[in-house]
Image (cartoon, rainbow, N blue to C red; front, top):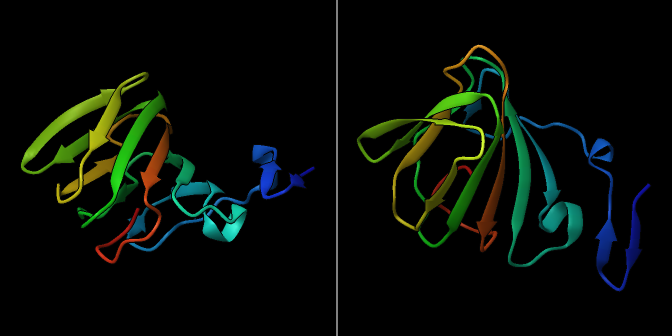
Length: 127
């Protein structure tokens, strides 16, 4: 059950439905835990994502946003610029603004990871 106090919230992850955001394909699902439309945040977008095998997000970049990915389970292929690298449990990826990137589940089980993005708004493509 969600509770709210002066803008602060406590919400159980099970209360937030899975979504496939634009430019995410093949079962690339995310739960938008903290973002303007779900929590009223102004500076942070915080999601847990679960990509089924072969799911991916289109290569994109952000003009002003920084992102951190933290892999919790599975393995995938992270593309940064023209470099591809396998990422797996407990790998942490930092992406500064202007860097093209994508992530795909190249493994045999679901790829689960956290994504923190700041600030929340950007016109350059998918979070």
